[in-house]
Every structure is written in structure tokens, then in C-alpha cells.
Image (cartoon, rainbow, N blue to C red; front, top):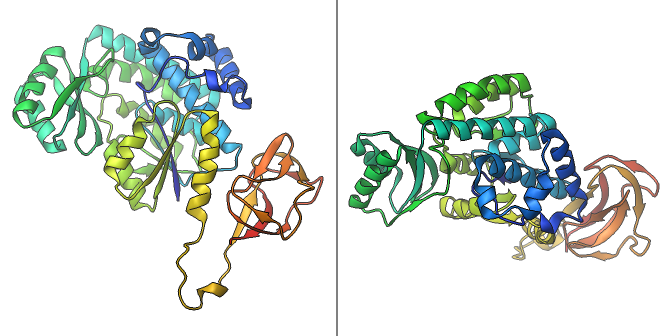
Amino acid sequence: MLAFTFPGQGSQRPGMGKPWVDHESWELVTEASEIAGRDVGDLLLNADAETLKDTRNAQLTTFVSSLMVLDAVERLGFEPSLCAGHSLGEYTALTANGALGFDDGVRLVIERAAAMHDAGTESPGVMSAVLGLDDEQVETACRRADSDVWVANFNAPGQVVIAGSPTGVQLASEHAKELGAKRIMALPVSGAFHTPLMAPARDRLREAIATAKPRDSDVPIVSNVDAKAHSHGNEWTTLLSAQLSSPVRWKQCLQTMFESGIKDFVELGPGGVLTGMAKRTIESARTLSISTPDELDKLIEWIGASSLPTQELHEGEHLFAVERLVVSPGAGVFVPNAKIANGARISVGDVIGMVGDQEVRSLFDGILQNYISVDGERLTPHQPVAWLRTI
């Protein structure tokens, strides 16, 4: 059981596109530039930190970067059981799973960023992270402030974000310190996101979401608003609208996925912030962050290791053989590796053939029993190629 998670605004960093320029997945950047009417590649390669802080740049570059990483992961043949995204990342998750088309996803993110930027200009606000208090104590600090300040993100145990007017956040911060907060950290954003101060952006975006007509998805996506898994497109029209002025219940999203059987959480996109939140929230979870092509090999090894049988053998279990399938990473004509025959010992990451110009890598250690696909056969993504018995 595997979950893909997608980061939100604030994860962007200068030069985050440079490792991907020569990778096949860079083609998504070109497509996004054509849709947006902007040079997204230049932002990913050359924009400085100050330029990327602009909400309109931060959201678009984070969205495209995350989908570029996803595209590379999908080429390896990996699929999740559940998905979720933090704030902006929810749009990435919906696009990743087909609930939104790529074109619609890009346009919605552009409209969302512009609406939030303008709302922040109309009603100036700030955000701060409160560290070391539980959720209820932070909510108490906001109530005691008796001002325009609310909880905006329930990120992880001891990590809660508050947002509102500068005065409101200052007062709530003082009360939080009185209640024992270890640290109050101002966040570099241009508005009080996920609070009632974003109501103008919500009204503006509602029509754009309805026009995009989110579709049903095969893989459920856990919503920030209610921390429940949804797969029906008509539900997302209201969920995405509500998300702008409602707190992000990320801790609860992680708990929902864990209770559904998820033990492995893979963050796809820049940053790695969500990986830290998952570790704090689910102690027994395995976590991994993928943001560069070099880390794709780590993913192969990481998932391969989780699929291997335990080394502890009980009476009679030495006769038990576990079978594993190797599947196609994409569509194309299959050509087996002529150097690998039945009975060969296979290690995690070994290339056992090609589908078009994509390598078919094994995710498991084992003994090759047989090729299921034959030389010259045209395959679809995730179609079985060969089967192994684990060692």
C-alpha cells in the first residue's frame, strides 16, 4: 500500500529544474509554458528566491515540478493506492490522477494563484508556524486573541500554522508563548491563506473550478477540507472552493491514509517538507522524498526492499516461494535483454529489457522464471513482462 503526496507553496527553490533539463519528463515544462503563455522553464532554471516567493510564480513552478517528478516515477511503473496534496498540492494530486486534465490543471493553478495574490493585496495578512503546542492549545491562543486570526494548517503533532491580520497573528503568538510554545516562526507568504480573508479568492475561483468539471478518478484523493478520500469528480467542485478559506487538515489526512492501510509515503516534488510531517505524524511509516532524477534509483531500491519477504523463517516456511511480477513502465514494443535467460539471478534495478526507449527494471531480487511478454510484442503501461521467485 503506497501513497503519493504532493507539496504546496513554500517548497519551491531556485534552480529546482536544473537536474531535469535533459530528462524526458522535461517535456511537461514545455507543454505548461505553452498553456500558461509564460516561460515556466526560465522560472525553474533562473528565477531567484525573491521572484519565486511571488504566489503567482511559487504555485505554478511547484505544480509543474511535482508533475514532472510524477511523470518520471510513472515511467518506472509505480502507482499509488491513495494520493493527497498539501494546499496547492491537492491540485497536483487531482491532475496526477486524471480528475483534472493537464491543461485545466495549469489554468486553474494560474487562476488560483492570481486570486490569492489579489485577495492578499486587498486584505493584507500574514502566517506563522507555532511549534511545540498541540492543536487545541493553538486554537485557544487564537480565540484569546479576540481578533482576525485562525488556525490555517494542522501539519503534524506540534506543528500548527496560524494566519490572519498582522495584529491578530501577533496577539495569538503572544498567547501561544504564554501557553508554552517553543517557537513562533513567521512564514514568507503574501497573504493569510486558508482563512476567511481568502473569501474573495474563493468566490473568484468557484466559477473556474466548475468550468474545469473535475472527473472521477480511479485512485482516491484525500481532501484537505475533511480528511476523507474522494474519487467522484462532482465532490471536488465544492471541496476545492472550500479549501481556500478552510484549514488544511494535513495531519488528519496522513492519519486517514494510515488507517486505510498505507505504510509507505512517497513525496513527489521539491522540498521534502511533507516527508518530515509524515515522520512526525505516523511513527511506523516509511517515507521517501523524490525531487531529482538521481533519486529515482533510490525509489526502486526503497520499494524493492519493502516487497522482499522477511528473512526470518519458521518451521515449514523454507518451502514457501513468493512470486513477483515485473511490469512495463510505459507503452511500446518489448525487447528482452538478450544477456538474461530463464534461471538468471536478478537484483533490484537490473534492466531485463526495453519497452520502446524505456528500460524495464526489476523492483525485486529473485530468480527469473520466465518472460511473460515476447520479443516484439506491443505492450501497454503496467502490463506484466516477466515473473520472478524471490530469493
